[in-house]
Amino acid sequence: MEVLPVSNETYNSEEDWDYPDYPDCNEPAQIEALSKRLEAELREAKNTHLMVGEVLLPNGLTHRIAQDILRIADNEPYGLRGCALYINFEGEGINKKLATFRCDPSTAPTFEVYLTLKQSTASWNNFLPQFIKKITRGSAVMISSDYQLQLKKLYRSSLY
Image 1 (cartoon, one colour):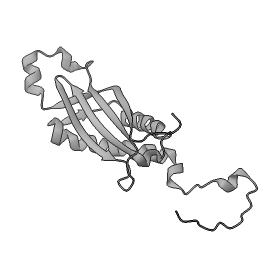
Image 2 (cartoon, one colour; image 1 turned 30 degrees about the vertical axis):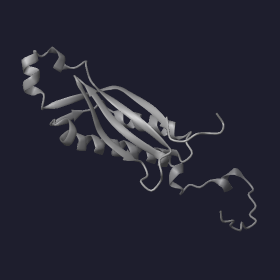
Image 3 (cartoon, one colour; image 1 turned 180 degrees about the vertical axis):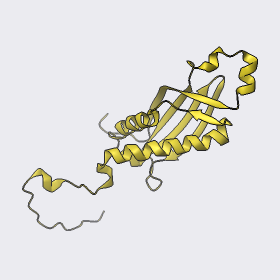
Image 4 (spheres, helix red, strand yellow; image 1 turned 120 degrees about the horizontal axis):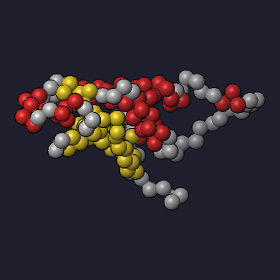
């Protein structure tokens, strides 16, 4: 470990300790960036894994998921930078892994978050006869507003 010299600074108030330009302190920007990343991963998965024309999401779902992930990351050693995120989908007889990404590729992950999105069961699609469902299967998937987040820590803490 390297020891760096510190100049004697006097701090007169808490405002002297604020770091407004430090990116990790800007929580709304982190939520927005993670939300956009989730949307991009779902767009990619739409064509590669789900093989559908449209993925329909409830309004604000990715924003809510991003807030929950950031809340989980708040207690971790590297915060959101140490997160590896796995996105899974559960639907009518379908269990698929949609995407995997690290929030900061330059930081070793210290925890994993498993996000499970579920297909909506309360939709117009339930009223269709089975043979019509098979014809329209390739058109759209409706995602429920319910989702599941699971945390897996990749380290041991001496506090526990």
